[in-house]
Length: 253
Image (cartoon, rainbow, N blue to C red; front, side):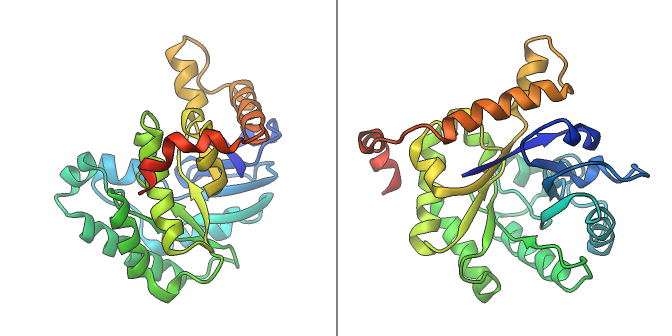
């Protein structure tokens, strides 16, 4: 598994040794290029849908942002504009899980018709119960090619219950074991579970910032991000023992 550290400010990317995960919302008002290595551009979905009930910017505008910032570093992927499916998000939009899933696919289709300068567009699987992610995968159909790199949404609020993340990942991979999954906002508590690390191809988190703020430190300090990323790297490369998986077997049924 490869870890991407979430950053509030693009200029911090030059200081961290880990690939970066940067929201388009942090880039819109920026005028000049920034120094970065490999990175992923996030669509800012959580902010847009939770705070505003939907996207303030059209697909064509997002495509223009992808083209603009693809010149900086190595932009490995831009995340499609998805709609999360947690209950508090559904309350905000007044729609159902199925409607959010269809809206996510429609938004993906629209973005795929745009000029994105050859940048890979990462489709996002949404749902809440494990089965609903499989339903969404089937809704995408042939849009998701064999071996595709695919995001798994609506999991960041599950970090206090890693077994629920295991159940979601297992359901998806049981349906499509060929997929390379990306976990959005997957924290250290979940990544300490061997199955989670093995099931994910990549993951991102900005948990370092919340921890720093809670503990009275600078929530924007790149050193906090670098320290957190180094801790994750040590976990990722830690030995895995078969016995560690047994306690989670029930969650994967």
